[in-house]
Image 1 (spheres, rainbow, N blue to C red):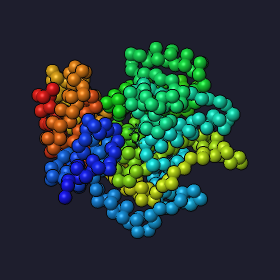
Image 2 (cartoon, helix red, strand yellow):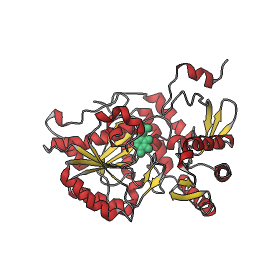
Image 3 (cartoon, rainbow, N blue to C red):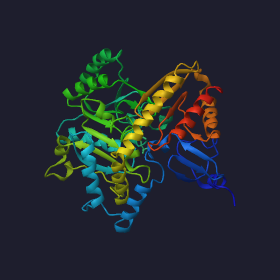
Image 4 (tube, rainbow, N blue to C red):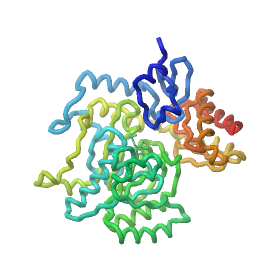
Length: 422
Ligand SMILES: *Cc1c(COP(=O)(O)O)cnc(C)c1O
């Protein structure tokens, strides 16, 4: 029998992969807690929670039990004209923990659809009110997903070339810092007076795909306040930052001005089953609530609010609010701080940053070595039994909340050792 990696090559096409340059896929056969097991029996600590999803650990018994229980009762039902207990329970649990102004939840399947729906809500909100607003505002270097609306508002990427002619009209501003915020607010006046801006989408405080770039909450608040004055709907993409990663339940909890629309996915379902939610205020919902059918939001996915996914999300939210998980989060925050104070003076380290359990360090290396260096780093970590996914010259950790002190130490040691090879 050929191994998985060999059989894979015959029919499979992987995401974000140029197969000619990267033909080898590693077969993973099992995962438990913070550990992945490959088909050769080697173990890896999952230092990025499998793209920020499995934050309560892989194959978490509490979550599996809840989903198995649900599976025996109701597996799937159309969510148009029908409802069910897992969705209703989840709506009540989620509304209790997201910012208070959020009153309605719209389900979909992944982070890209969550932002796509947020964008459609913003555009149709103004349309329903008879006001034509056809331009969106976004941050440079943002990432909001791979569908057309989501791609349009993401930072211009070399990979989007074939599609750019079809994009929504988007104006971009840099993320705010204490130094650029005054100029940025002046530039924003011009953008607002020259365009009919419908909505502004942003990753609050941390831009994940831009290598965990972090920015200032107070400056962001100034932008949100200014946009609100012009009736621009603000869309917080919390697909990456949501559910405890920033040290609060949501990144928007760090910012006084709350968004009009919020997008959730990834850790929403604890890494078990794909699902997403776009939430909005009562004010937005009311612009769609009408005697006219066409004013409704005619968007729907077949698996909307799948009962099993809802059960997983509900179990995840219960865990998130437990003392055990809150203590684990605090322990990771402290461990990262201790690690940071040791490593930040290292000559190979250019900069470090942390928000909650998200920790990132930039290597002090020339950018032309980027391609090879990145692959060499990745391989170094994998050889050490640590799954980290450096972005350019940035190494970041976003480990599951249940990671042990020893496992964290192993990640830190591997990062120290990586400084010797760059
Ligand atoms: C991952 C991500 C998305 C896209 O989510 P998918 O489930 O991969 O479609 C959107 N926004 C942010 C901030 C993300 O991190």
